[in-house]
Structure formats: C-alpha cells, structure tokens
Length: 69
Image (cartoon, rainbow, N blue to C red):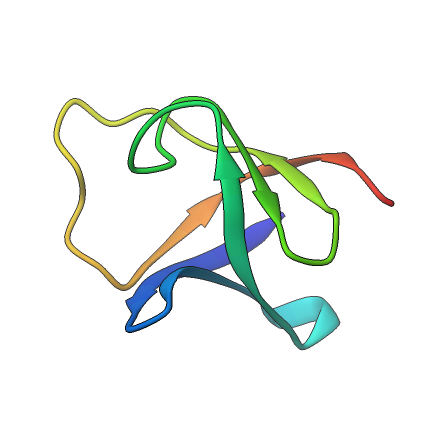
C-alpha cells in the first residue's frame, strides 16, 4: 500500500491516500520508523521499508499493513 510519511510539529505522520486517512505515528520498532513496524494513532500497524540513511521527508513509500484494529 502506498503511504506518504512526513514530519509535523506533533511528530511523524502517515497519510494513506486510498483511505483519505491522516494519523500520527505513536509507536515504532526502530527510531525514525524505517526498517521495522510503525503503529498509528488509529491502531493500524505498517511494516516500513528500510533505508541506509533516513530519507528526505515528505516521501511516498510502499508499506505493508500488518494489522487492522
């Protein structure tokens, strides 16, 4: 699923265009959300792609949704 990740004053935010959903990242497996899972404020969890260096934000990436809560 394509998602957009951006930095906001409140923290990292994920936008899911197909669902018109904007949610903050509330928990992540690794610092900076890249290369592990990231949980959104609505309970969804995504497996995030890994990068050698943190990418410039905002960025659109392919992420796999692990849960729907």
